[in-house]
Length: 497
Image 1 (cartoon, one colour):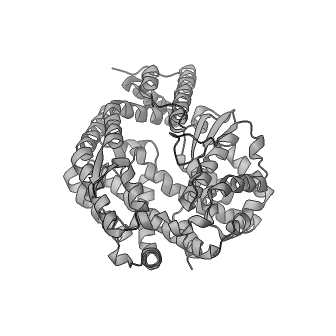
Image 2: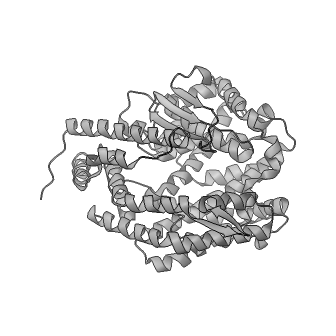
Image 3: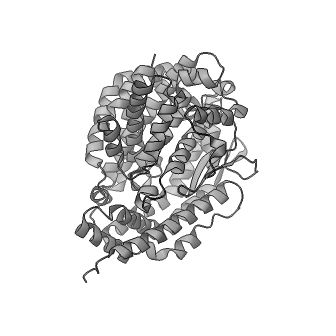
């Protein structure tokens, strides 16, 4: 049966309804995770807007893309992702329920499943870290992986109903630069091999007293916890540092009527900062419950980057540029703010602790580990989403991750470690975007670019574009360069001492 054509008025109506749907989801997210509401009632929101993500809506928008080029591409992707999400929603909610309710007894004490990773990160005793990790793996394999396997099969079936042979083929059609990024990831892993081994070995010996070759997966969260630096990043200095940094850039956080700071202490409030862009750009929520420590500071500044981006988006832009588009853009702005915390020049301006260069060196080693891990994860997802046999993908996950990180992962994580929508590609491209843009800012405004109002003016101008352009296009307009992961190589080598 032929699909009826989609007119401009129909697309405008679809945009408006999609905008209301996303606003409702973001508000529900804010209310629940800010500790203002016990229930997380997303099912009713999906039901109210169910016409947005039907198979018919996907096909009609695909027809519009095929007849008018890329005009409706982001709307089509939104509809398809919503369709696949709706098809798998019950199972996704069941996995979330299991993660929230499962618990295991370790050393005679019951520990909720979701608290196992934080417990590993905060546990100084290595033998107990191993017991906690093995308990997590056992629960994952026995209770969660049967659901993850069903979820993968349902996603494959839904992709076929959309008319595509594989999930990867679908995202190729969405114009994701998958093959190009895969080439960059392989090259990045080759280029950073020696520097990574040296930097990680130095970091692991310094923090845990063990060499890289003796490090186990249950040691890595403890290493990344960086508890030795907690005193240098106090909780009561977090918000003043953010306010001062924004002021240096010419942004008065207190005067931003569209930015709402939620700093109240609530028992059920998320301990990690987050941003909820309920109305872009008119109502952006930045939620903070300061704990302190470098991890908490990174989270706050990361979410502040999202917040300022969304708060400056032009209200005249269509839905695609305000809420959809290339997520490497908003993740790039978040990374730009997050990585300020690692900069010795910024630390000297905002904090008072010794050895900021040592901290920058360790942060660079951790970032190199993370980017290599995500490069391997992305390469794994490329293979997984070509509909490879799931039984074979367990060993392939271990092989790729072990090569990238030099630490043996658990095969049990071969599906739990996969995000929908190739979001790993957004993070990888955002880190390259951040490195290249920061290099440009330093060249134009000096090493302390974050203290220059002229730099703030440029950022506000770029933020106003929302996600109208892809990250590659925006970077080209500003610097004349294409996104390239080699920029991360240059940036980390500069930081590594």
